[in-house]
Image (cartoon, rainbow, N blue to C red; front, side, top):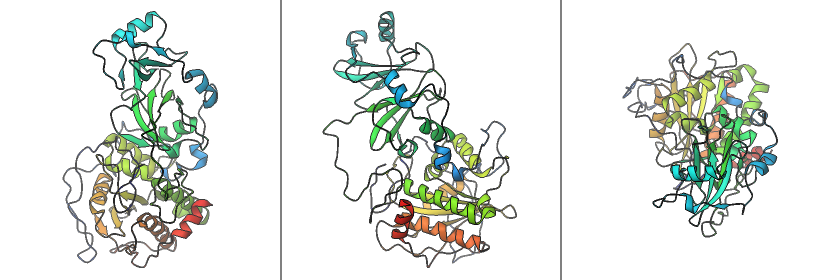
Length: 446
C-alpha cells in the first residue's frame, strides 16, 4: 500500500470497487447544535435494511474473520501450494518463442490470446491445458505467461509480465502465509480462504484481478477448475524500478511491527482489532456478541464497493451464525482514500449504534476535526444511517498518530460500553483521550 500526504496511510489499495453514486447525509450534526437532527439523503439508502432474497447468505460475523484460526483454514487441494507451483508453473527459462503465432498488429499488454495464436499453438500442442494450465512465452522480445481460463480451450489469457492488467490494485499482503515467496504460483490456500469470504477473488464474470503482495505486483487469473483454481502471475520489477524502502517503514505486513513515527496501515488497525475482539470475548462475552470491529478493507468496500458487494459484506458483519441480526455496535475505521485515489492520508473512527430500540445513529471521531467529514458522511450513508453526529475527540499533536487515536479511541469507547455507558442524546465524547503509541507497539508485538 502506498501512502502520501501529511498524515495517515490509505485504507487498503482496493480501489477496483467503484462507487455506485453519491449517497450521503447533507451535513454533520454538530454537538453544539441541536442533536440528532435528521439529514436528507440524495438517494435511497439500502444497507441496513433486511437482506434481499437473492443476496449471498452470511456464514459468520466479521469480527473474527481475519483471525489466524479462520484465515488459515485450509481448503481441499491435491497437494501443497509449493508442490503445485512446481508442477503447474514452468521454471524461468522454460519458454517458447511465440512471436510467429501472433498477428502483425499485435501490441504488448495483458489481453486474451488472439485467435491466430490459439489456432497455431493449439495445433502444435503448445497452449495451456487442464494438465498444465500455465505456459510461458516470449513474444517479440517480451515475456508472457499464458493461463487457461474458466471458458475452456478458447479462453486463454496472456499476462504481460512487464506490466499488470489495466485496472486498480488490491494490497492483499495480509492474506498470504508468512513464508510466501515471490514467484508465479497457484494462490495459497490461506489467500483463497481469506479473500473468498470477502468476494475479493476472480470470478467467471471478472476472471482477472490485480494484487500487490509485499510491494510486488501480481495478476490473479481464474483457472478452468472452478472458484478455488486461481493462479498468481508475478510481475518482476525491473532493476531500475526497485526503490529503497523508507527508513521509517518496517514493511512487515503482519501488523506486528510499528515504527516510532510510522503511519499506521490497515494491517496494524486490523491486528489490534483482532486482539481487542479476543479480549472482549473473554471479559465481556455479551458485549462481544453484539459488537463488530470492522476490518479497514471491509470498511473501504462498504464505502466504495458496488451495492451488491457492499450488501453482501455488511450482511456477513451484522448476522451471526444462526442468521440473527445481533450487531448493536459497529466500529469502522474511516480513511480519506477514494475510488480514484487510493493513497489516503488520514484515519478517523465511525461508531454506529444499531441497538434495536432506536434508529441507527453514527458518531464520528476525528483527531483532526473536520478532515474526514466527507468520507464519514459517505460511509454512514452507504450503511443507511441518516443521523450523524460529530463526537468530541482530543486533537493529535503530530503528523503520524491519527491511526493510534482510532485504535485507542475504539478501546476507550469499548471500556465505557462495558461499564454500562451508552450514547443517548449526546455521543460518548473522547475529548480527554491520550493516545499511547508505545502501548500499541507493545500490543502488536505480543
